[in-house]
Length: 376
Image (cartoon, rainbow, N blue to C red):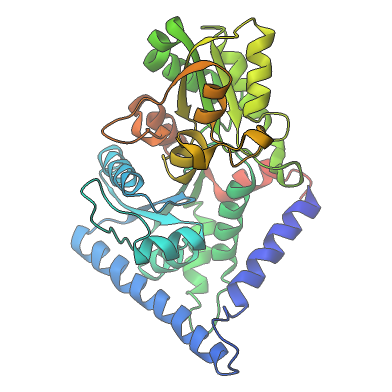
């Protein structure tokens, strides 16, 4: 575990200090540093203006992996609004941990339902945390919007530790006395991912999902598609949460299944094998995304329809969508939508409340950190 932690922190440190080369010129490094510092400046102004306007002294930072889909942006908007209602004395901010999602969202990779290109500016946790610190909020909650406490959650933890260690570049250092005050007063908290606790969170999420989809389970299979981590990145051994969730769901109905796009031995073909083992060789299959939002994975890997999502020569290929895979296995497949899109978990109020309760019960950063790294 110590080696995993050291690798993550070293990777984050490199990412925060290494220039991002966009050309071969030797002058790029200085330009990159100036651009990074200007990012801090933009967020300092944005957050400072919000704090001055609201007069609030508590900040909640929601950390998602990210997306480029407009329906996902709207889901994040609704999540932010739900948090503002749940924490009326706090300013709420949303950030993305994925540079790729941030860059592509800013240039408008996708369109809205009317065909209009949608551009959104999101920032990395380090920028928002710096701005929140520069604005001198006296209490900070950092809430992971990840589903499992895996690789992406480890990156969230690393970002917060980096913030508290005040390890930023150039003139972006924060007031050490302020950071010490946060630590001394136990005023920075870490909210855990959705399925953090197998004994509490997993049964509660199963109950909420069954309340929504029990009628579908009476008609056929309800298969949830999560993300998962590859074996080499199964941080905190979090992949087991998908197996635990399937077990809990099957207490309500044997027609519930949970698979992933990235967890070994739990791909769509493994879900199919478990279905066949229960004698489910035909009938209806309803597909739902077990992800915080419905983005590329939900639209393409799960719901992708047509020849571009099916290669008969390699049926188990990751490029074949779940829709096409189960359809070609003889099932009657449906992807339920809200409007024109599948729904992510943040759009399900009962499931969102699990995240909100995690924020309300968030642990002081050091307590949360040492509970994950007990040898430290």
